Length: 81
Image 1: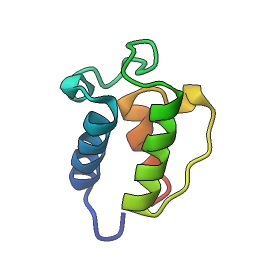
Image 2 (image 1 turned 45 degrees about the vertical axis):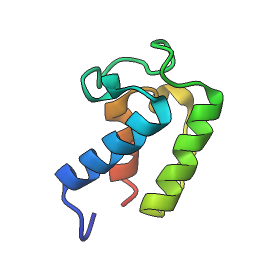
Image 3 (image 1 turned 60 degrees about the horizontal axis):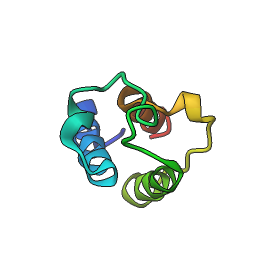
Image 4 (image 1 turned 180 degrees about the horizontal axis):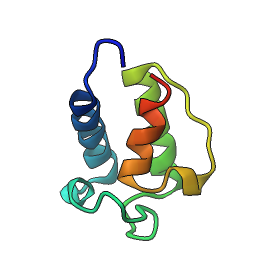
């Protein structure tokens, strides 16, 4: 995160997640399973990974349970920057 603060990363990821999931609930239910809530499915997950790669230049390949909540997704991006 050389040129980006955690807060900037967080806000950018929340914007991406809100767009991919089509719901601003991602901003409040940050530790809830997005798949269980019906906010993310397989196609949405692929779209999310492509958006993360486009915006942040990082590639993420992890198991679904390592990236199924907003906070886990933000963490996965953060550790790769």
